[in-house]
Length: 350
Image 1 (cartoon, one colour):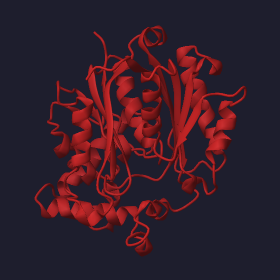
Image 2 (cartoon, one colour; image 1 turned 60 degrees about the vertical axis):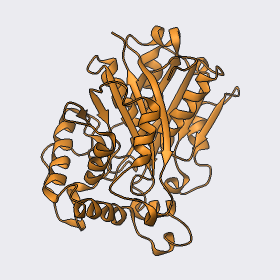
Image 3 (cartoon, one colour; image 1 turned 120 degrees about the horizontal axis):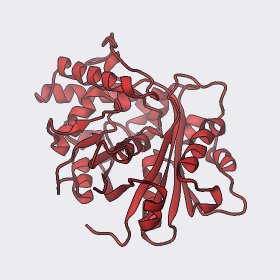
Image 4 (cartoon, helix red, strand yellow; image 1 turned 90 degrees about the vertical axis):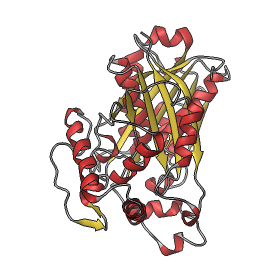
C-alpha cells in the first residue's frame, strides 16, 4: 500500500533496563532519552510538530501520571500532544497517522515504565475482563503458562525448545548494552508449569524515545532513515475461552495489512515476553530460519512494561540506520496471551 507521505524513524534511544531505579522519578528516567534523540537529529524541542507518549497509571500508582513527564518535556508555549494508556508502540502509531494526515512533519514519541515498586504480575491482572476473569486474579505468568501448555499439547513445541529460545535470546543480548539479562543463564525452577524462570521476562524499569519525520525532512535528519512501509494493529477476542491460544490471527492480519508478506524480511524484532510466545508469533508470521529474530535479545532480555514494544520498533530501525538490515518487521503486544498486536514493516534505501 502506498501512503500519501513517506514517514521514517530517524532517531532512537533507550535507557539501560534496571531491576530497580528507586533513585529516579519517571521524569528523571525519561529526560536522558529525550535529550539523546534530539541530539542525534539536531532538532530542538520547538522543532517538534507532535508529541505522543505511552505509559500507564497502574504502574505509577496515581491518576494522570503522564502529565509529570510531560512537564519535563515542556508543554509551554502550548504544544500539540497526546498520550496513550498503552505501550509506546501505539503512541508511535498515533504519531505516524498524525504525520500521514499532514498535520505535522516531525514527531517525538516516548514511553516509560517503572515496574519495580509493585508486583507487576498482579498489576497486569487489571487488563482482564472485570466480571468473569479479573476477580479470580490469574496473574500474567499463570495465563502465559496456560498458553504454553496449550502449545505443548498441540505439538507446537516442548520444554527443551522453549529453553533454547530463552538461551538464544540472552546470548544475543550479550551485545546489547541496555539489556538486563544477558549471557548464559540457567532455566531455573518452575514458576508456573510448564514455564520456568528462564522462560519468563525479567522485571525492570526503563524508557525509550524515537523521532519520526516525513519525506525529505527525514533524509535531512538521518543518513539512512528507517522508512515505515506499513503499520497495522489488531486485537483478539477479549474472552480467553473463545481463543485458540496456540495461534495469533490478529498478528497475522496486522502483518498482512502492513505488507509484511509482500517481500522477504531479514530481521524481526518480536515483542514476546515469554519464550512460548515467540513460538506462537513465528508460526503466525511464517518466519523461517533466514530471518534473524530478536538480535537485540528481545523482551526475554529486557522488558520494561509500556516501553518494550516501542523498543522493538526502535531496535529494528537502528539496525536499518546502521546498514545491518534492509527490510525488518517490528511487533508489539499488549494484554494477556498476545491479546493486542501491532506490526510495522521498516525498510532502508539502498
